[in-house]
Length: 325
Image (tube, rainbow, N blue to C red; front, side):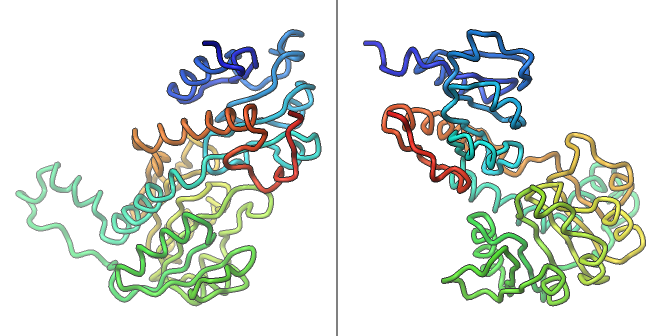
């Protein structure tokens, strides 16, 4: 029996998780182009496309090129690559994939923190290079998790999940957010500098966008201090990478662990040169199970929108958008 959504055209620009593509193809009419470029849209696409499923940048020009567009289902909890504000003005719904990756990313954050403080990656390389046998035990690490105070920049779902894990390690938690989170007992700081001054470990889970562009700057890093450890599991754009590399090189802070970068997959050479930096290729949610759950939520949002008129996880900029069903 043919689904009532079978004739609805869903556009996938560029790459998308194959599980999501398979489900879209089975439930809707799948349309694909190489990238989100209005020049690649023919007249039929412009007329027929009602939904977009994507893990790439969707700007205002692309939204405007699709006059019958109703929904953009973004793959990922972060959706700064989508012009959600413009979509909201055009009555286009935008959804993301929160919750299903929260615990995985929080796990990665704690693993990255431990690797950074205790130099676990460098210690493994030491063993593999035969130095344990030839040179003796790996040198004692300057850093330890014991006695640290942790500040979280961005106390959303993932930030709270990280905070629970930090507490389990017996460490204190403070945070900075756009606004104070009611119902949480953690110490709130009205500014990022104030937070950095109060702690020696800063974990950034903040979203990207103009409001957080290079928020972690030289002033924040100086406030963190020479015993300071910085971990970024949020967005690379929130960090002044030049200032961070300088702070690592001159001892302004002790170490950093980064899973995200401003221009992925391009990692600045200055950061690569820092032995006190632990660098990961954006693997925060990159397990098979979690990525499949994210793919399912992308498609579940499309189905819910076209069958019920209400998506599962709308972003706040488009919560006012209503279906024309």
